[in-house]
Image (cartoon, rainbow, N blue to C red; front, side, top):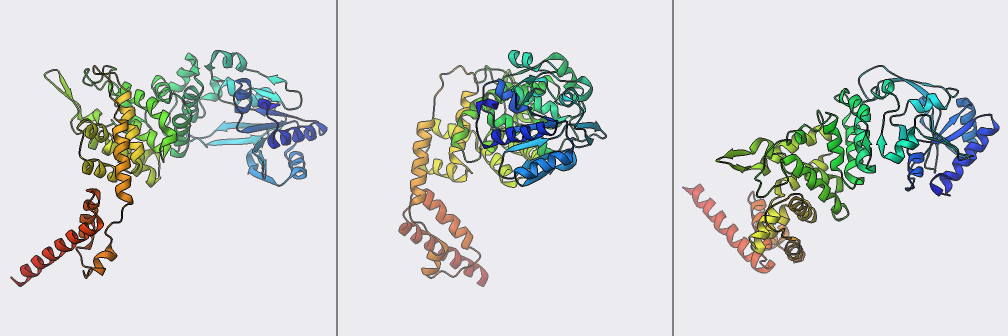
Length: 462
């Protein structure tokens, strides 16, 4: 039983394996589900590989069990509606171009387990398990590598054919605490990542950022492999950028950023867009690469917040086409220093209200500021501003729940909708943030409107 799980998916796998055996073939659990089973962690995705029968026979077997899904029939990959099982036939792949998908694929059900396992990326993912007997098939020393926490390429000949494997290795290292062996690092250093699609890069990054306890490992492995470019050049530019040692005894901006993302991951359950939050933690100091100066032994990074927004925009345009994600990241990046600054100054409620109003996710902004503070080593004692900031966020929310002036209120008071309406509503919103009651705010807005309109009329007569 894979992962000691007895559910509809494992029962389906066992039914398929029994029917395949009757036709003279064998069915195996393969890839990550075997790896995770042997690591004694929950198995999420079940993949099986069917050997020794033709595609036509496999299709007829699947048709007896439910509605067959042709996930990639040309590549010999199927599913059954209502089940979370990928069913594949062994295949041979030959690289014919630079892209991640530039392979010619040939289904070969009689290739044998050695040939099928050899096309996989790392030895820990090349393990197979006979579904009916539970026998582990380990052609490349995957069990030993699993025990020692080693990520080792299955074959130096085939590994380099797929550049996505560099990123996969980095995210496996981050998620599982594995280390790449020297030979695999050497292979990765010689691989070109430019032709990868941004969707695949974003997919691997997302796994590292959202499921690893220490997402910094993903970037450290890419640095070790010389693979931060072309996708993470903005992060690479932080290497060696100095910081004031009084506030950043941990070292350069790269080290600080890695510490911040490892702190930020602790707050993923408290933010509205976890991936965006992690990207903001990564991007928050991108601007220090171009704004840092040193004069008389003193290091400054004046204006790095706005510079970070500019550089993060370039990064996001390369990484993702999702507009909402982009805006979320840029907004948090722009305001990342503000919470700690206003808290340290014990700023007025109006000031904190304005900050929260401008934020796309006020909770995330507070947690980003916290991660920024925790992700460094400074001479002073760490001061947490969370209590102050969440108390002020409560006040902001209470203010926002009160009745407020809307366009229909201005019309009801006798104001004709004119070009200045949006400016008047903006003024009304400022009064709302200042805690002015709706009744008083309406009086002030009407008074302002009448004065400005009267002034406008006079200027036209002259």
